[in-house]
Image 1 (cartoon, helix red, strand yellow):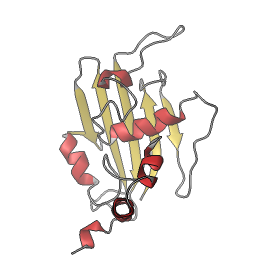
Image 2 (cartoon, one colour; image 1 turned 120 degrees about the horizontal axis):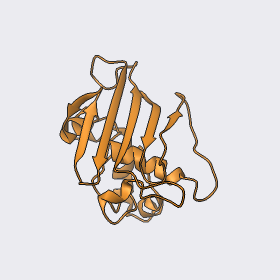
Image 3 (cartoon, helix red, strand yellow; image 1 turned 90 degrees about the horizontal axis):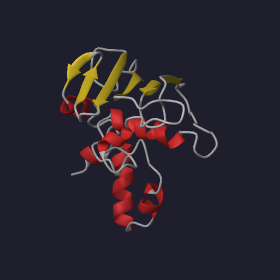
Image 4 (cartoon, helix red, strand yellow; image 1 turned 135 degrees about the vertical axis):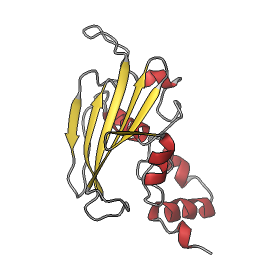
Length: 172
């Protein structure tokens, strides 16, 4: 299982639709300060169901929608879609690819989709349960989170690594 593709449109600094393709090995997102690298990881968190504007580095959830610039007008929605290659069936569904999409309008209304079928946010949470991916997983570690983890008590650090490794469910 790996992140195969990410499409972002109207999310934060991405006014135009962009498509990022990833390989099944290690991928890196590099670029100068202010080029949108952190917004890419925010987009992944958001499409997986993040509900905290603070975690997404905003003050309110509508801040994820492109607010306009000198050359581009503000948009009325943000949309992020990610495609997971599931050929190894780590997610126990009958699909080799799983597409998750979230769309949010300035009204605050959000829509969620799994493989283009409307769904609830809860369905997305349940799909990724026990995979290490998801809103509460450690597959995406935001800015400042590493310092927080390292300054935790040793038991708390161990819990973080056990959860990331997916072994918590086997503890008695």
